Length: 341
Image (cartoon, rainbow, N blue to C red; front, top):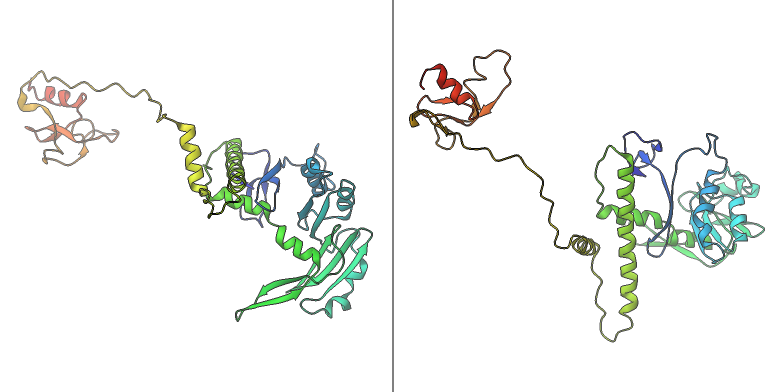
């Protein structure tokens, strides 16, 4: 989600998310480094008709460029479905994810209340539906994993921390280990974006979107830099140098983009000309504040004693008359009324 509360034709409201209002973006990222591979801005319903299989369509669009490469896609229960897994399998693309119990095609054997009630922590039951394997695992609660690449059994375990200290090794299905290790790439990328985000408030929704993409580009550039740094500095007999941190990388990019440029000169107002008094030096306009004679306050000519006047404050005045007077015209007008000149 890209934050934004202003007018936006694509604005979404998701009350369960940390950012509740903004532009929804679907993303796919690499699980090993968090590199953002592709994204899609959600623009609402297609042709004014409610989309059937929105999650299915989004996943197909995002991984279409990765087909026939044998990759494994980790997705959560919002996207997971049996038709999606069968279609991706035809592309030599595999899926691991969690599954909701109300999905169409969910195995009836895994809905058995007596079966679920008798499970202890670390127990799991699997059902194979052709090339797709579903597994119900009991951790602190029941979780269903689905995969079209893992087997239905294995000697895999997962570590859990205990309240009193120490760790507990629990048996689990192979798909659970793969899911826990590889899931969260998009969250990792978003975390790196937020670390040094250049996002700023704007009334224009597209500005927030553009700046978010600029942040994503900077993060991707840093990830590529780190990967190339490791390749160029291995193997070495001595300890290889460490790549620069994210903050230093950002500063380096900024300095290279700026070069010798500092800022453009903005045309300012013409310098005010000093007022040449046409009367005695005893009634010159002087800075009363710097001389310590009066404090900064309202003008005695155009503010004090004048009805419906705008408040104008000044630090200048007449040293002889001990009055605050605007330096522009009030000083001369005040003394003309007194017939001083």
